[in-house]
Picture 1 (cartoon, rainbow, N blue to C red):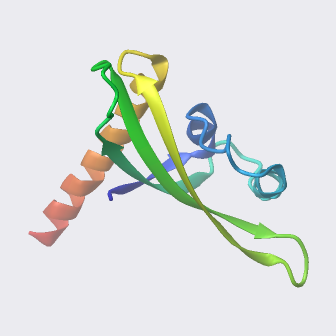
Picture 2: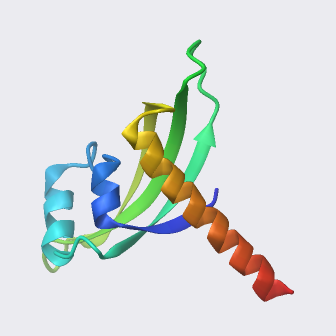
Length: 113
């Protein structure tokens, strides 16, 4: 599954925190108050079993570190699936994410040569 760095602002726009319990999101945002901070996500496009060919489905995986005190520290692993219309603003933002993944893969290939 390819991974890339995206801004917290982009992650919010894509709704990646929608299914995460509030206490984890609040702690994460308390410690990362700049929307330009980056988080690493893994992205996987999957076949949509629906009959609508204009819809896309993508799986996102990422981690949210948390610290609620001395005995309650760790990392929450998040896996969320988003289904969206291929011509929606969401899809336009996903194009940016896929472009950044392709650029990273190309630069990795150039470094290996």
